[in-house]
Length: 472
Image (cartoon, rainbow, N blue to C red; front, side, top):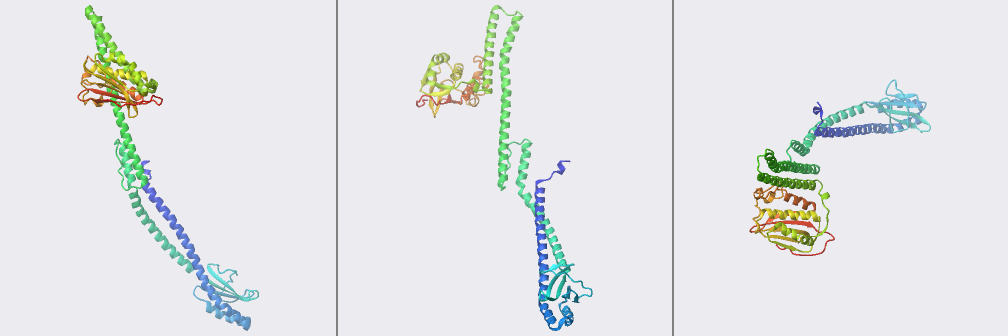
């Protein structure tokens, strides 16, 4: 019921347009009526004034020459002279007694010192006969207002007819104009309905619309694109979370299955002393694997929720930092030969977390490159940033794996071997730590074979000055 009583915008605009035009026509009509009425009354009074201006000297001359008796005869002649259709004449002496009139029972009108006045539906013009201070008599000319009212009535009827016709035409033309003007708004309404129904990314596609509607359409287009982007991100995050939970469950299920299997066999006494010893070692290895996986998950969770709280950024001289870690570097990649190249540079970084980044990258080399592979570590400057490069001459990373190398639980075929025991979280942790320090990490292949990880970090404002060219 409520929806059926809703007023449309086009209906309101047309109604208000017609209402404003009606008010304007009413004001014009009333003004025209009053002006025409005044003009007609003034014109009639002017005609009577001209007539009375001609006869008044004649009456005065007759009275002055022949007396009041002769004036009575002359007055009747003048009445006949002045009388015309719709015009009445009344002449009195100085005492106000009627001397002559155009009607048998004439009533003497009042005497006003005005150009004209309306009295008993008549336009009245009066004049004094003789000296104004010692008048011989008075004369009045009265014209009926009925002809004037008839003219005004016909004019009002014609105006009302034309005004109504104008309102009808204005309403019809206004409806066409308003609907054409609001067509872009209808497109916007259709677009918003489609967006509300789930068609995110749909555009209004307005053409030749007013500037305000163009701006509104562009805002809706940006909103639609933003919603589409947000839903895409939400979908990607949901899919990532689903994969994360599935992969984490899978990673935890494998060692738990092995542990419970060995414990079940031990509890039933079906293993020899040697087999029990090997089982205990396997349980310890799987427990260590589970602990490492849980620690990695905990690290990722903390870096996701509050990365700033997990860091202590300080000006760090990377050249001295790498030199201090040189023994550990050789131990991590042994027996692979290592070449370390450093240039003075100071970055704004957390030394412990950055050490964790380097350890994860070297651990990746330890697991996935042959013993004969060469390792290169470089520290220096690159385009106003501090840079850390870790490269190896191993078999490299397949091109189809490169876009996903930092995804959580993503592992190539080499990482799926039981020997590596990797969980696919090491590089994800590395990326989270680097990004939390306002840096970036990327990976690129080395021709003809090998892989290079490049970590860039912001320079410390109070860091040491230095410059170097990067060597490949």
